[in-house]
Length: 309
Length: 293
Image 1 (cartoon, chains in turn orange, brown):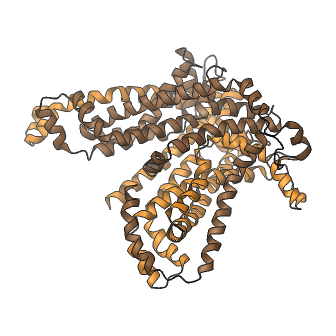
Image 2 (cartoon, rainbow over the protein chains, first blue to last red):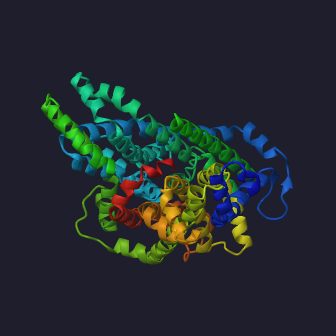
Image 3 (cartoon, each protein chain N blue to C red):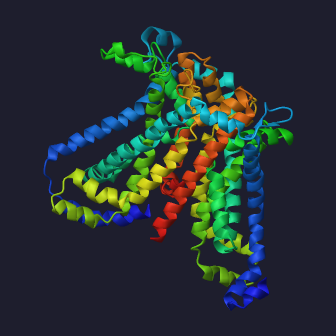
């Protein structure tokens, strides 16, 4: 091997001599990834073609689970709910976060000093540092039916008629969960966008300001085009994250009432550990994995292309 | 941090040019933002208020009343009931071990990929990154099954190994790109001095990238602390559970009254808030780098 390539150039040959022992450093990492990630991944795909309660012999059913999945309307409902979560975790925080970051950076930072801006930013970011399960406890307490904090607040300001079992009513549960997710997520884009705004050439703003551009115009014509990489990163990562929303659903609603807030992530766990339908759960998890992988690969390729350009 | 100091002088002249029209308007914007920031904090405040409110006052005055006295029994009772000290220790052990081991694993991998430039490194790198991004839902049942098989089910060791790999996969990705720009003269010089690869890694590479390793350590620690899904499935007994798992499972059972729930939420918030304050500078340095996650 070394001899064949030594013909190309002396420098390469020198590196190739040492190639083998550098690879040794990779050995523990590769072995661990195979044992902890690759093998389970393949096993999960394999069990998705079987009917298996978790004990005894799995029974091969081919694409049976997938057929049920795609013909059974329930599955599409799961993804429909997840689409609402994409809006709550990705779209709304990106739009709102952009306006907030711009106001903090361009306005507060410049007229009241960066210190005021960073204090306000820290307040907005705080929910992001909580374990999601704990954030879920906080909100399921606030949204308690009857005399929960939100209902009590509504009553105190004379809107008692709006009091509601927010998480318990199938008509409002998904939107209540979505609202909680916005509260949790909003700090992330604010931080990323504010960091990105520091990268933007201040000359662009000055030019825009001298031209008399109002702030919405500066935001639209200067900031947003300049922050395209950050916007892309935020949209992509939060969309992928929304497909993995288990903890908040578990703590807030357990997928209920009925299946009103159930999502693929939670449904796979239910099938694994509550309904003992491991094959069906694996099929849901496999579809979820394929979707996340496709999004991740698309994201990485687009990012690579942007870097090369 | 560096970008901040660099851009600051550049904006100052712009500031003096800025015409101060509509001056009262700026206070309106400030007020709106303060109200928004305060609204974000309201949930924390009412949780804290109700955690130190007596159940009697809660049932008579409701959740929005200010406590008459500092009632600490609720928090203390909850602490004892769930053996919260133990949960804190479990979380510390798991998150601390994962953070250390995942940094070590990232360094080893990134050394081979970023400095060793082994063949096929792009694909190895993509494989690591995808290993980090995969939904844990697609791994959970086999991991549950396999940990049972090797008698690691319901042990902290299993969770430590699994998250070392998941976090280390991300660290590998980040650190490889940092090390690919590492000055090669330094490595050549050390090699001419007769240093072996391991020695070069420990004596030359690690000291220079230490700031990046600190950022990785902090993020791995906090990410692992906040994990819920896999730890909930794999840790079922009181002696092994982490803080979020213990609190989340209790909440899921819907067995707690209102003041106990707020006490439990407060105990979940406090460590996270403490980390936020302790690690604030490292966090703000690293969040943009971690944006890929």
